[in-house]
Image 1 (cartoon, rainbow, N blue to C red):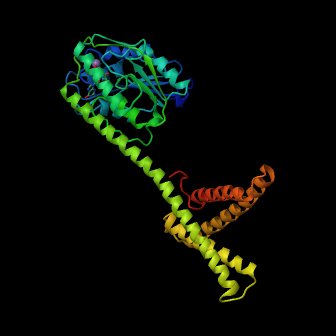
Image 2: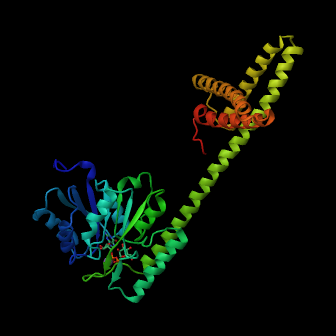
Image 3: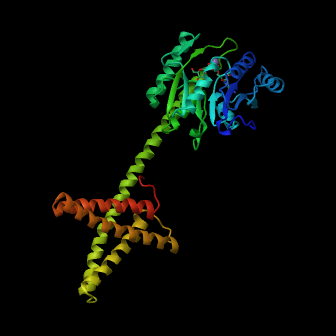
Length: 388
Ligand code: GDD
Ligand code: MN
């Protein structure tokens, strides 16, 4: 977009999937253009699945012959066959350039006049997803049969209970979000439930629901059939499995943390023994060094065995390239010495300022030093994330 009135990173992309919407598409495109968010470049991308009723051709003609507002473009992606709503949406997202994405139906069930509000909410608040919602206060459905309403309610409950999503309308087909929330995600894009999959797979995103009235289509017919219901159950199942897998991995991370800590302190205890024996050996055994010299040898020996054992066993680092190993060794000795100094200082501080008894102060100080030692070496010597 070369227009200088607009800043490139504010680009908005509206994704409109179509299948046999020849009677609706022009009117929805017109209505979108009448309700463009202000001061932002906008593109509408129609994703058509080779509709037998010629929807794709109608859009192409529209693109080539109708003059659009400044900063506004319309494009069409034409796929060879009907591959499903969610996959059409995904295709549209991939082919779009907006930092803000809006997804909506083409059959005029979704009123474009709330698009500016959706875009504003994303731009001026901490929200990452804005759901146009039928089931929050102020929202409603008009023109649906009792049966269809019931199916929708049941499907919504399944998502809420089964997958733990907190939104009132997680199955809405009308929503907006910041493109970057999809970074690193792999979407299955089965069936109709694009929003649900995004809600389940994105973590820590903030979601806002704003009410609207869904108006059943006047022209053409719904493509939602029995197979959609099965697709839905299948995708809920997959998302459920996805959730349990994630939780398992998280649990493993905490276990990894603890089991490494356990190994680290086992090594530490072993180091004490090495320290003691070597110091003794050099003072009274194979040589009769001055006891302080013997003790220094003992300390160096135990730090070295601690380092090697922690490298191989605790942190499972088998890379012994000389440079890398030496740097790690240096850091390890450094942190251990700092740990010793911190321990001394801490004992002194506790005893002097809090008139704590020496034994109690010593326990606190040893714990603090040991914990600090583990964390520092984990993070800086062996370059791991602290909490896994
Ligand atoms: N490209 C493409 N390919 N578009 C499709 C396909 C497909 O396979 N299937 C449906 N669409 C388009 C339709 O042309 C329409 O614009 C939109 O997707 C929604 O299809 P409808 O068939 O009109 O769906 P609905 O009105 O029954 O369902 C609505 O409500 C659901 C919630 O109850 C939609 O908004 C759904 O997205 C929503 O989940
Ligand atoms: Mn519809």
